[in-house]
Structures are given as structure tokens and as C-alpha cells.
Image (cartoon, rainbow, N blue to C red; front, side):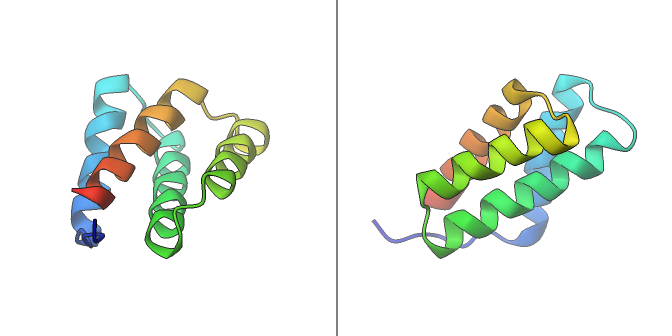
Length: 83
């Protein structure tokens, strides 16, 4: 199935909606947006699960991101990438 390229604003809006639902405020929003853009970039280039897992581990360890929110963002963006 060919990949569809979602506009950048759709990616950002998707991440923002998730963060609103999860009650994320303040500077952590930027952290999660950075994570989402990294996942989107990985998905567009090759979709390698190992690279995605590395990004999740990096954001958990180095930035203190919530693993559940990272999972929600990842799943939502991968759905965007393949629909």
C-alpha cells in the first residue's frame, strides 16, 4: 500500500489534539511535538520499528516523556502515514 503524505499542519494538529486529551501543558508540549515530528520523519523515510523504538526510549530517558503518551502519538501518526 503506498504511503500518503499528510501535510505538516495535520501532523501538528494530531499531536496537539492528543496532548489536549492527555492534559499536557507547558514546555512538555514542545517535547512531545518534537517526538511526533521525529516519528513522522522515520515513518516517511523507512518506517523501521527499531528506529521508532529507539526514539521512544530516547524521549522517555532523556526528556522524561510519559511512555503512554509516546505510544498514543506513535500509533496515531503511523495510522496517518498509512491511510
